[in-house]
Image 1 (cartoon, rainbow, N blue to C red):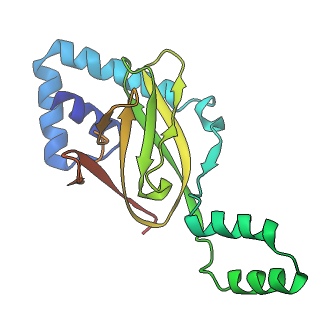
Image 2: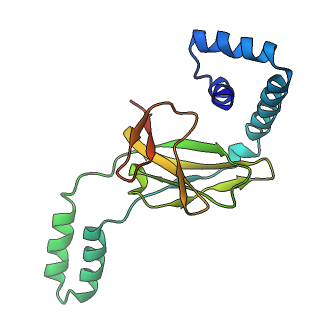
Amino acid sequence: MKDEFISLFIDDAMTLDEKIEFIELIHADAAYKDDTLSFLQQESMLRSDVTHTTPVVDIRAETRFNVYVRRTWGYLATAAATACIIFFLTFQSPVTATVPYRFVLYQPEAKQVQLSGSFTDWQAVTMNRIGDSGYWDITVGIPRGEHQFSYILNGEKTLADPSIPTREKDDFGGENSILVVGV
């Protein structure tokens, strides 16, 4: 609970009652105060100019239809058939605009951290280790709307985002975080 309070405080996601409880915990426990200050110093380092240069990764999951169309083009013998396919492809729904979103997770013991969610078609995307701080991050272009996601630690264990309290059970006995972007 204490680590969750620190994360909520850093993300400015606390209610007034949670802020009061957080301040009371800090005053009551010197070690907790020191941990909180340490996390805030690490967050300050993460927000420095170095982390602002993280490139936006635009993830577009390739569908079976797109793979079929790409292979089919190689087999088309006439220009008329190619023109027909291009004509029908133009009536696909337009590509939705994405919003850059930065995912940050503190997992100092992890050797690898991946992000997987509805916006990646549940494909795992490897996150970047930020020096020796124990933090991992990635900025991803995400379509506006509600999305489910989780982190994958060392290729095995799934973990919901500890800084996002809204969650939903998945079909495998775990939890996914619910993220709402630009709504």
